Length: 122
Image (cartoon, rainbow, N blue to C red; front, side, top):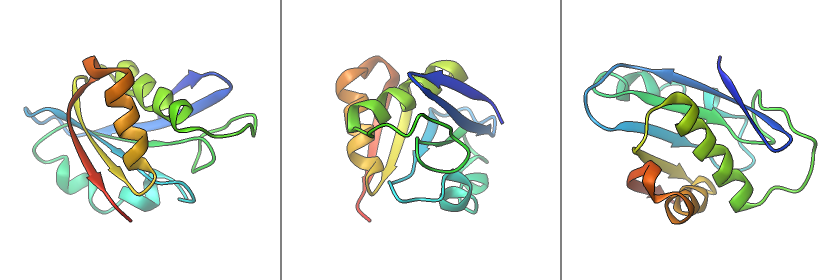
């Protein structure tokens, strides 16, 4: 699983599919066990038609960090770094629960990386 460094975090992500449409980045909420449990069943289905990236934000899954405070802006920087590292921007961002304000922050801070937002309350 690839990873990218952001501040004191080593953010893990996975990229699947080779679709022709805009890439899709799936962002889980806080309190999640990570991308594998949140998106494990749906990501392969979505990857039939597009490239899908899932990531473990700080405090979830296999991402390591220094245990510092988590902010929406800090998590948005992690999502932006994954999009840049994977080379899949501009991408559609789907944010679930706390992932919704995180993806909205990515759009506000880095509109060049965002094609479309999909915000889901949880």
